[in-house]
Image (cartoon, rainbow, N blue to C red; front, top):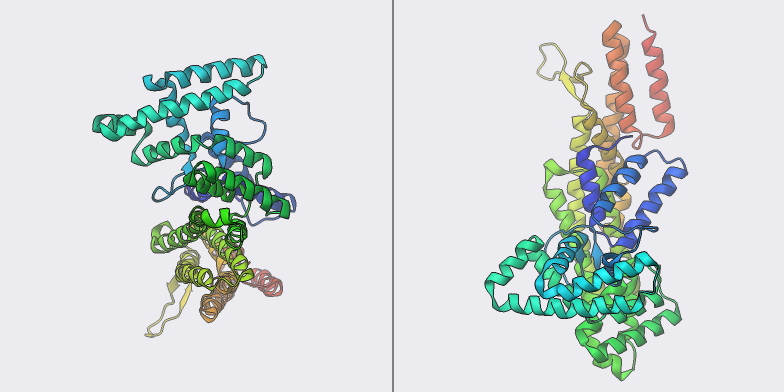
Length: 475
């Protein structure tokens, strides 16, 4: 199974929205599926091509050589995503902004001390010397230099335009502003990395109290910095929604310091809902763009949204937070409407891969017959296979989204009947045709059954194949 260029771009876009640890886990799941013999994914295309292209965007994988640039951005890795999608959001920096920010730091006169510190750090790394003091010097110089550059940009329109041009736009300029604020918390982010492993699946009791102490220490220094620390925790988790447990741990504490830090803690809860709402809006956009619809990417997005919504709901139910549960349901409603549109588009993909022609005769009710003389393009067949997988799981997805189960069941039933009937009609065509026409009908049946496989049970598909074999030897 191969992957088209268009599909690669769509999958890269999906992965680009995910935190690094989540994307890595997803790759691991794909590798596990390949190792177990799974045949519904183009494993090699995804694992080889997408990994290569994500690396081109600056994604960090184990075993890569350290240098000053990598050490500089490492404390902020929990804020990084692959690519920008939509508006700028607090605590989310696309990796595509890192290269221009680093170029600015190495070239701008006001940041010459940072450039010198980076060069010294690289020399020490290459020589195998201790780098701790040099790393600290780089952060201090960068914070001071970026402060000068950004302060000037806020009062001089020409300076701001120059910065935006160097960085690639206003959104990247906003990323630079955020990075400046994050630099004040480098030590806290490093402590977080020592406290909580990247890709952690949740919190132990010790984790909760260690993170509580770290949060309060950050809040004593700066309330906004404390809020960013919580956003880093969200990005550090394999399942970001588990961060809601930490919010409730703070919110239900009688500790006066946590009560005073309530606004900073609330930023975590709001960020989690921004994630969910952003996912719902993304599904809505995808459903509206019929010409761009891709069933495989749609299934991945729907599954990720459902996991996120279910995860938040589980945490909210533990503390009877009905307000939060209502917000989750509102997002599910948006996603459910988008999913119904996905199903309609999936049915269209099935129709595109099962061409028909009118039967002859004078009746006004002429039946349609499979048009095996006009086989669909390989891309249409690939899209139809993925559409069938989506429809086969429609009732499951509908239940998780709170959508109308009868609509999903009806779509699945219609798809099953259409593909079963189409395959049966092709058996009839095989029996009636001869020579090249019979071979063409047999090839069309192979395509149809490969598409319909998720919709038909094994016995039904086997019976159709047996009938086709018998029809192929008919005189």
